[in-house]
Image 1: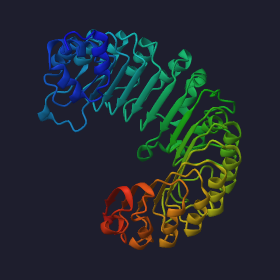
Image 2: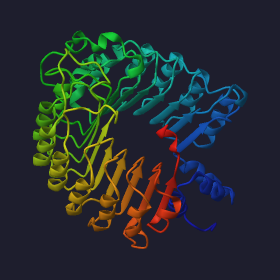
Image 3: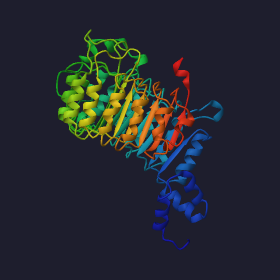
Image 4: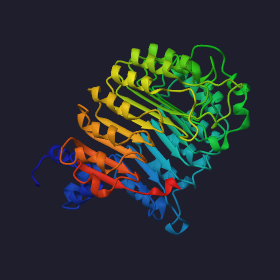
Amino acid sequence: MDELPDHLVWDILSKLHTTDDRNSLSLSCKRFFSLDNEQRYSLRIGCGLVPASDALLSLCRRFPNLSKVEIIYSGWMSKLGKQVDDQGLLVLTTNCHSLTDLTLSFCTFITDVGIGHLSSCPELSSLKLNFAPRITGCGVLSLAVGCKKLRRLHLIRCLNVASVEWLEYFGKLETLEELCIKNCRAIGEGDLIKLRNSWRKLTSLQFEVDANYRYMKVYDQLDVERWPKQLVPCDSLVELSLGNCIIAPGRGLACVLRNCKNLEKLHLDMCTGVSDSDIIALVQKASHLRSISLRVPSDFTLPLLNNITLRLTDESLSAVAQHCSKLESFKISFSDGEFPSLFSFTLQGIITLIQKCPVRELSLDHVCVFNDMGMEALCSAQKLEILELVHCQEVSDEGLILVSQFPSLNVLKLSKCLGVTDDGMRPLVGSHKLELLVVEDCPQVSRRGVHGAATSVSFKQDLSWMY
């Protein structure tokens, strides 16, 4: 082994993907130890790094070519020692010269001062902040000013990021390609307009409003009227995910939906105000859509916008069926099975989409209209490989028996379905039809009933949801 050229050893090390394996090999001899140190490009640390700053300095010196660092303090308690703080970030930025990707998760000791130290990382292109309560908009602004190559920014549960001057600055730079803002209480839909020309570069946008702390003004028309009625240039957008958002007719995020001609993934979670016209306008342009996920609010979940009830109906599904010839994944979820939207998707609308699009993955959650007739229609779904049914109480054993006739199905997931029993599973036992069967919290299905129904079976039963 001592005579192996360095490049061959590096090739061997590159084949080891787990940290334990790499550590074991590097400890086998000094040469492997030295080469592994040079080739170690990523590091994940957290609880147990004591004292944090000194340990971080030691790691940076041992691994001089680190480009990706994750600092995660999930589950941290004071008895585990002090977290990495502003001084620790200074140590990291001073000694990690190749840093391009940094994740700070549950780092509650880091303030705007620490974020300011990142300005000395000229190559930093990705930053993810998850629950950083001491960081404010000023810190994010200093980051925007100092890190000119930043392309990916994630802000999740950053509760004190209130000012949005940093959004305006990124709007002028036109460098952001991926932006994720989730549950930052003071940032609303109307603030996204400050991105301005940066919309041209964005390929991925994930925006989720914290529904529990939403300002009352967000329900008012004034917030959405901050967006002028104009075209939003988002031709580069490939992935769009919106949660708990207000979609105002003809304004704001509605303009985004209507101008994403290269969109491939769409996820709308509890978004009020989305109408058929929005979806129709989207799919007429976005012919490359491959994935659609809709979680629809019930009629009693959120206040109505301007007292106008806006719902998605079969018109949306028909447009998707007509224009989305590449659709592979389709998911529908209703937020409340007891009070579903009264005028929404019908069984025929869902069947039409499945029959016309090459859907590989179908997930239905609280879709009360889906029944045994729907299962029968899936027998003609030539491309369907994965089927997930959650709270679909109208599906019985008669529909479940038909699974053995689905042409390409290899994964079936059932959760909280009252109508299926062990009898419906019997045709699958020993048939080698399924590669994976997951059954969770279905009261009439037993562990014995699913035994042998697939190559791999996962069974759990917790019936507390029923009471």
